[in-house]
Amino acid sequence: TMAHSKALLVLENFIGGKFVPCSSYIDSYNPSTGDVYCRVPDSGKEEVEAAVKSAKAAFPIWSSKSPLERSQILNKLADLIEHDLEAFAQAESKDQGKTITFARTVDIPRAVYNFRFFASSILHHTTECTEMATMGCVHYTSRAPVGVAGLISPWNLPLYLLTWKIAPAIACGNTVVAKPSEMTSVTAWMMCKLLEKAGVPHGVVNIVFGTGTKAGEALVCHPDVPLISFTGSTLTAQRITEKSAPHCKRLSLELGGKNPAIIFDDADLMQCIPTTLRSSFANQGEICLCTSRIFVQRGIYSEFLKRFVAEAKKWKVGNPSDPTVDVGALISKEHLEKVRSYVKKAQAEGARVLCGEGVDSLALPTGNQKGYFMLPTVIAKVKDESCCMQEEIFGPVTCVVAFDTEEEVIERANSVKYGLAATVWSGNVGRVHRVAQRLQAGLVWTNCWLVRDLNLPFGGMKASGIGREGAKDSYEFFTEVKTITIKH
Ligand code: NAD
Image (tube, rainbow, N blue to C red; front, side, top):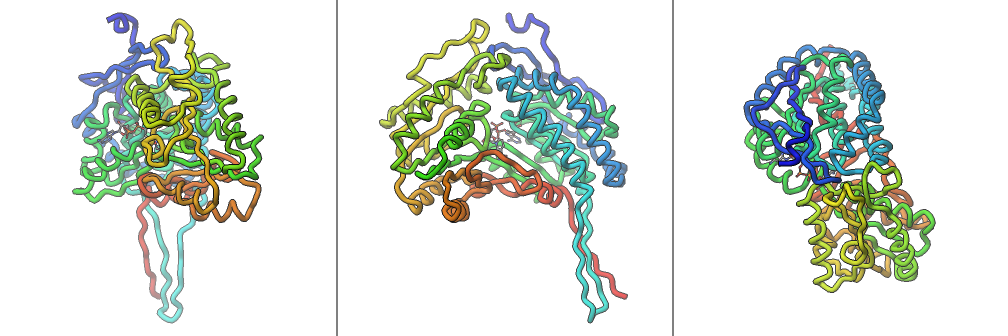
């Protein structure tokens, strides 16, 4: 084909400190042009077996290093990624479809920070100690790395989420076998080139590229991988839970969301509107924390909607490498079709599409005509039972509905299967506290969105996940605890 006649980027697995070719490959598309531009190893059992073997072999040495030694290596790796920040950002944008601006200011800086953060936090943990004076005993807890960690990450924030797992796993002294999404593997492969220079011993970080059903399941089913940290969809998490059950693996599952924004009539709309636009449409709406149900109190509903739609129409969709563009391409043709189908279903149910898909026209630059683009879309007059209000769409689509009372909105906000994040907008401190306490969500942001302190737990309730990640939580997940009793 035309696409294949151009020189394609060919990735290789990274096993035991070496790049290893694979016997078969998967095509990877540039979402902003629709062209195949990269070939990703289609790894399976054999490749996973080799990677687990090298991770196992590297474990004794890596786990016996002091936290300070590991910390220095993580910091070095952070510096090396930061040094190449622009190249990483370009690659992430091309591979994922996100804007260069987003990759440059969010994805790659956060990947760097993930290593710096865990390089520091690993130095500050303390364990517990209790005394039983009458028995002449002291008890203390001791934590040790578990072994080979299996890490599986999604396509929306590729290097950001992969490093959010690799950094704590290796900081704690585990060795890892990671499998990024087959749709966004390039930046992980680029990072492999820096590991040796950073001083990461061979076999500590192994990356096996490929699909979920082949490479991912081989990792999940491998008897020598006692823990799996997974970020992705709820459906895949169910499959991983089933497949890992015979081995009783330790699982951390960071899954989807259907996140509400609750906007009371005393909200500061000057802050609320721009932030809610970002929380709905940032990264094409492809962030698990994105808002997709906006509840606005009746008194300000019309005004909010008018201003929100007017601002949404200003978001520029187009070539992700154009610095003036706000919305890049969606990850794939299939995903674009899926997101669009939700808008059609809403219309069929009688909802009103106020801007975006199907109502406004999308003009794309010549080179991007075959890209997977879509306008930010706002839906109103939609019922709470509608699939658009219940299911995760994971695209630039948000629903706006009215509510009357605090009690009512809490119940409606909680009436979905997910429980990842929520935002609450109000100038009334008492109300903000009350509502935040009662929302079923692992994260509640009031009068802001996506402000994260990595020290604190991150994760979802209900169908949004099991377990939490963060300084202490990741440390606990990636280590095994033992209680030791000493009697004099
Ligand atoms: P996905 O579940 O399809 O895939 C995620 C990863 O799992 C990929 O690497 C994939 O190859 C792998 N995988 C797929 N099937 C597998 C199997 N049977 N066994 C092992 N691995 C398998 O998710 P996605 O479409 O890549 O990502 C989007 C989803 O991720 C959304 O639902 C989003 O909300 C969620 N997400 C959650 C968070 C969070 O922190 N809670 C963050 C980002 C994304």
